[in-house]
Image 1 (cartoon, one colour):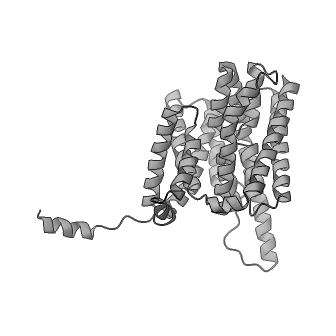
Image 2 (cartoon, rainbow, N blue to C red; image 1 turned 90 degrees about the vertical axis):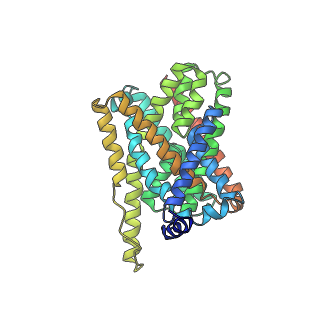
Image 3 (tube, rainbow, N blue to C red; image 1 turned 180 degrees about the vertical axis):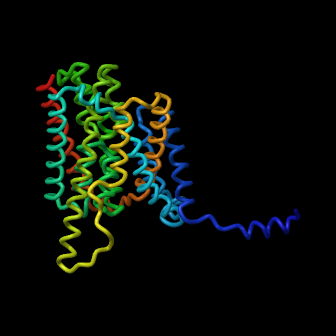
Length: 349
């Protein structure tokens, strides 16, 4: 083939467009997050993915790409890949493990989640934060960080900017917990088991829980993961509740003569049904350990890509305008979840 023929063939190839550029950039971001975690194991991959997404959105060389040709794919990653990751998250849960914690611990977790969610939602609205930010931050703090924010935002139809700023706040505070909570273990008089349960009940993301609890020993790590997964189980009823409210609001808007922009969200979104199905599948014990390991790896990669996409939607100048209020919400919610969970651990152990 001559040089002229090769040039003509290259010109005839379809341009790279649609979701492809954004998905490719998200894949690069995931690879970079893995590299960061390998270099600094204390930094979870998902935390690194959010931070790298935020950096990409503000670097002069990448900013036009992130806001332009890559935006559709990055938005798709933040939504669809997040849903797939949440479905696979169900394979980390077994009802037998959760029930093995005992009813006192289950009641403690329910109390922590309810108090944190209600308190954060109330404070966020009192501070006048815009859009769905109070709801999303409350969800992230009370359940499982960015994964829960992604799930609830799908049911509520939240704006991408609200999702991105909420993910950034919850990720930042969860990362700070990795450094702060181990320093408080001995001053608060917590043994290995108590510390693990406190971490599992108060830290947001699963990866952040592991990074924090492992400093207390293997017993602390096991208890932290079990308590944390109990919180993750509550993701399904919370999403269903948000969907019910969204349907009611949509019905009310229609009754007032406001045109609907689309169909009402289902009470149980499809990805939440998949999440519950994966819990049941894991509980049956039919899946071999190798399959669970592969599913866990895939889940982490999907969530990392989704969080890179959400991080790339963060607009720091916008966050600065509400910086004081959203920082106050993060601090207040942190005090609530840490305080209520600490009291719960003392009562139940």
